[in-house]
Structures are given as structure tokens and as C-alpha cells.
Amino acid sequence: MDATYDVLSPWAETDPIPLNGINPRLPELRGKRVGLSANYKRAATPIQDAVEAELHARYGDQITISRFAQSGTHDIGGSPDEGPRYAEWLEKEVDTVIVAVGD
Amino acid sequence: MYDTIFVEQHHKPAVALVNEGFVHDARSAAAGKGMPGARFVPQTVPCECTVPEKIQRGVREAMGDIIAALTLPLKSEEATPPPRPTDVTRGSVFSGDLDEVQRFFYNRGWTDGLPILPPTRAAVDEMLTGTDLPPDNVVGNVIPRLGKATVEKIAINAVMAGALPTAMPLLVAGVEALLDPESGFGVFEVSTGSWAPFYVINGPIRAQLRINGSTGALSPGDLANATIGRAMGLIVKNLGGARKGVEDMGVLGNPAKYAMVLGENEEASPWQPQHVQHGFSSDQSCVTVSFPNSYAQIVPRGTDDCGILETIKDRLGPQWRQLTLLVCPSHAETLAEAGWTTQRIIAELQRSRPAPPATGTGLLSGPEGVRIVVAGGPGAWLGLVTGVGRWVTKPVTLPSDWDRLVKKYRDRVPNYLRY
Image 1: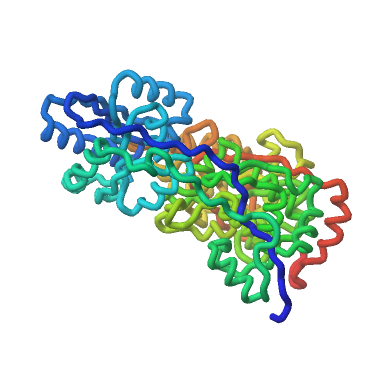
Image 2 (image 1 turned 90 degrees about the vertical axis):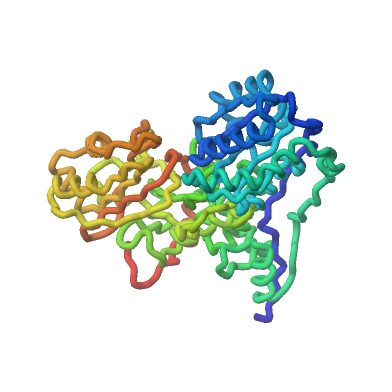
């Protein structure tokens, strides 16, 4: 137990990643198109059902709801199948998005 | 959180709803993707909940926060995140006696809970004799931290695990296998399902390293099996940075994350080794990784081919997605004598699998739902290793002085064993 050990770190180096801020928020939701995105977990879509019901209860028809349900089990942005469809949905159909993860 | 960041990257404000137990995970995922200010709202809906009343209550309680997350102006750090501190990873990081080293490493979360061997410069240099690759060669970046898996960092973790330098070629190939997108490592290593990497070794390296594929292959006691699995676990932990309860959200955890390594018992198999069946030559050493989370052992109700196969078929679960079937040598011989090839067995199992539930996926039905590995010693047990994803096999590249290296370390064998 008396020996002294100079030890190296097992912890990996990382390349610095560019840091990005988030987008400015909407002043309010009235008059906006709210996207509800659900991943593949089984609670995600029922959660969005509940969110949609709550939004309708608060805003009635003053907001528009658009839904997107992921079918694959991978990171949607990296999915060659769903990623482009998701991006198109974001561009054309929504002003802001609530993402339900399911856990 | 990745979906939420994807939305923000497409210039739309977003908020994620996450279970309240996943707050650290959400924060880490956002930071790891370079968007630490991404907004999320913890909610009380239980994970994977199927009870409508609980879902509605949890959402109702969170609704005010959800709307606020979409409408409240940004704080300065959300709009312009401050730079992150960088970790010191080069050179000597600590000096102390054995107990102090253990404490230093454990306190930083760099161990698997067991004591480690100190990775001194001399020990790491010896480990590096196990490969011709330069120490700064980057094998890949390990998620979620995207840590650089340099050959030297692999060697440091191998020293800590107690591995011999002859393990280095396998460890490099193991990292390559994990980082192959086909393996699904990025999802499975941190999943609530506690999937653990299972490494099957094929080819001549099994004998050269004394990797056990016979009696008790998956039990502790074999230096190669134990330290290769342990080193891979430390590599995942220290290069990828997946912390338990932060990024690794495995609900129950899995003892196989310590080590689940075996060599296929090729010498006792009537069939071609599994790596040969998937395109590699018999003299090529390979490592194959998959991600099971369960391992059941069964005795067939009869020792003829029907008894063996019917017992397996009875055990197939409707939700199973991937099965590695471990067949002990005596059952393999029985099946082969009755004319069963591995391909026929796999087809038979897939044909007879239970009907999946309406919402099910996979269920042994993919192009590769089942693999057969001959393993174990005398006896009558079968192993059902069930998991997800695909098997990924990588060839092992040996250093130029391999024969000398094998000879140097080959005397490490318990005196009660003769393989």
C-alpha cells in the first residue's frame, strides 16, 4: 500500500461542439398552429390526446392542432425515412411543437 | 430530447414533456447535442402509462408549464449558452497510493464499483504492445458524450479492468462493433430496458487467449472472458460517459453489464461457427455483439431432436424480437444427427413463433431474428438469450508480433484447468 501510482485518466476527450440557443418563443398561442409530436413509446400518443384536449379546453378553435406520430424506434431526425417527412411537417404545418416522449 | 432539438434546429420553438424521473437525462441529452437551453417540462404521467385517468391528470397538472415553456421570453443563457468547462484528460491526473487511487477513480464515477488496477504510464504502455495501431488513433466517438475512443484510452480502461495486452485486438474490434450503427448501441446502452452487450468470440483467438466457450463459459473465473467484458464496460462508461440514472436509465439494470463474453465452442460443434455462417472465414477471429437483456436456461423435456426443439418452441415469447440460442454440444450433435442444420432450426422457430400482439414489432421475424451459437460443456442445458436489434460482427486485426505476445501471456491459467 506504500507504493505511489501516477495514473492516467480513462475519461475520453471530446471535440468542442457548437452551442446553439433555442428559438424565441411565441407571444401567445392564440392564432397559432401547435404541433403535437409523439415518439414511438406507447404512452406518447395518449399523452398527446390529453394535451390536445387541454389545449382545446383553453383555446377552443383559436388554435390549430397538427399531429405527427413517429413509427420507427430511432432518433427521428436521423431517420432517413421519417426525418425528411418530419422536417417537412415542421416547415409547413406548425408554428410551435410540444413533444411527448412517453417516459 | 433529440426530437425537441431537431424541432428547434428547424427554427420552431419547442418543449418536451418528460417523466419527472428523467429530468437529468433530458438535461444531459440537450447539453450533449449542444443546446443546453432546450426546454422541457417534467410531468407525473408514469412511464409507458396505459391508464387514461393518470395520463389526463398528469398532463392537466403540467399544462400551465407547457404553455409557459412555449411563450415565456428566453433567458440570456437559453439564447446564448455559456461555454462548457473542458475535462482534463491527458497526462497524469492523480498520484497516490493504491487506496487513494481507488477512491479517486470511484469518486469520479470511473469504475464499475469494483477495484481497478492503476493505469500507470508503464502499465498502459505494456497494454499498447497488444496492437500496432498508434495510441492516438481514434477508433470512433462513443455516445452519448461522443468521447474519442483513442487506442490509448481503450488501453487505459483495459489496464483498469485487469486485461492482458492480448485482449487489445478484441477490444478495438469490440468498440468498432458497438459503434456500427447497425448495433443500435446508442439506444440500447441507455435504454430503460437495461440491454447489455453480449460478446461472442469466434476463431483462433479463443484458444490463444483462453476464452472459455465450454463449461461455465458465462460464469466468473476466466481471465479473458471476465476482463474483456469488464474492459468493454469501462470503455462504454468512460469514453461514452453514460452515467447510471443520468444517461443510462435502465430501470432494473443488468449484471451482464459487468461482463457477458463467451467463445463459441467451435470444436464441439457439428455446424459451421456462427461467424463463418455470416461470411467470415474459419481462420478469421471475430467478435460479435448483440444487446440482450435476459438469459434463461432450460432443460429439454426430451433429448431427441423433437424434445429439444419442441421445448424451445414452447418457450418462445410473443414479444421476442431477437434470440441468440445457446446450444450445448450434446444437443447440437443430436440435432445435427437428425438432419437439422442451423438454417432449418431457425426457420422452424420462426415458423412456429407465437402470433405477435397487434402493437408488436420485430418478434424474431426480421431477416435475422435468431442466431445459434454452440456453447457450454457436458450436460443438457440450453440458453435463450433474448434481446433487441441486430448482431454485428467485426474481424479482429492482430499485431505483427502476435505469436510472441500470445506466448508471453499464455501461462496465465488456473492450475485446475486444462482447455
